[in-house]
Length: 162
Image (tube, rainbow, N blue to C red; front, side):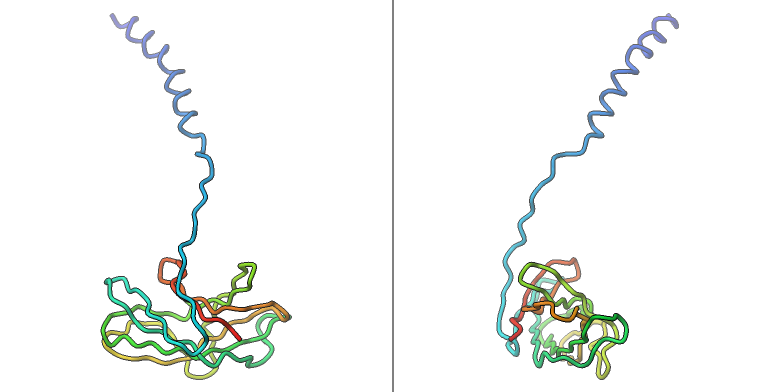
């Protein structure tokens, strides 16, 4: 009885190994389509969804070059003022949620180094917050949008840069 059990185990082993190889084959690539998001002019308010299901109003204004970047040669430092109005919601914010974007999709993340009055990061609940965000962008890059991401990396709104 032991011999037949061992033979059955040995005979089944290659089938199990073969099955494991089939499962290890990666699935074909999938295409994900990014959902549209609201876009408005610089200086206008956007309603942005929050994790709790509410909305917060966000405004970007006064996009301007501050100086050449001392941190990264060949880049210029740009600054934008951000207003958050969470009077009816709780919202987790952070400077890194803002990206400068070119028409072909290249994106440049904000930095934690705003010279004055940085937006910083935190949670606003039933209040307003204003601060600056800075982004280092390669000189000559054709940036045309400031994009706002949520905390999961999804674009939720944008402002057209004039």
